[in-house]
Length: 291
Image (cartoon, rainbow, N blue to C red; front, side, top):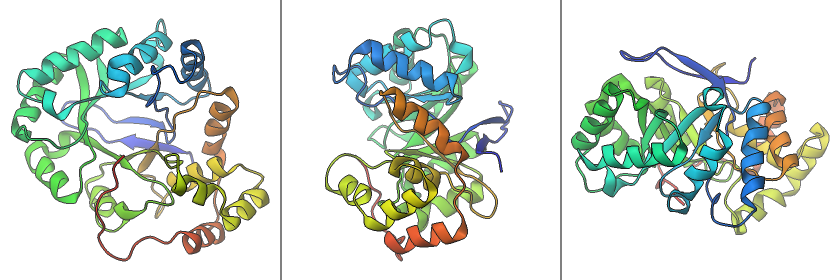
């Protein structure tokens, strides 16, 4: 099975199919790595087929968008570009202004997808109105949300209908809460999950995953790295259909290459059962994990 995911057609946009692993940019533009290395990493990812590039006005106060814009200079059409708006900038007029600021920093005149970064105090009706205006003006092609749990997403869906393209949430083997109710509901609506932090954020939980003997043993048997195993798990098809696109951030060339190679990893039912046993999904609804 091809490791691709399709954003379904809507009343305003044709369906689009992308590789199930893209590229994140959180922490880029903050001086944690040389800017030239961040730019090169994103370009390398494009060369390897990781065409979805995710960013946000929040990241480095727009600095990550500037890095992404530099990486996409003269090759904008090769990327499916996603950015996100702060909830306090998501008003009827302020969202349009915020989007225009993102476009300027990115050096482009349109986004392939624009997301509300998390729920806020501005009525969703206002945000939707702004998104629809941006879409009508050709500044965004699709829109969606991020960090919405099931109740919030259902409210958004009642307003936006099938025009809403995605919900971007934290999802990895050690954080499977969305599997109880959120992910099944999104599958019913054919609304994909965009998984941020698919390799887990730094700290105890990441070490717990990377140091787990069962994961180390399985990775060794498959001749893959732990990050590749986690990515292959995150994008695994269920009942023959993929509904998750993972957006790991990488700067080192070897990490970018390994992320792209994870698209070709097939996990057997036996391998998946071993991962389930090591990190089982919760049996009840849990609060949405957010970092």
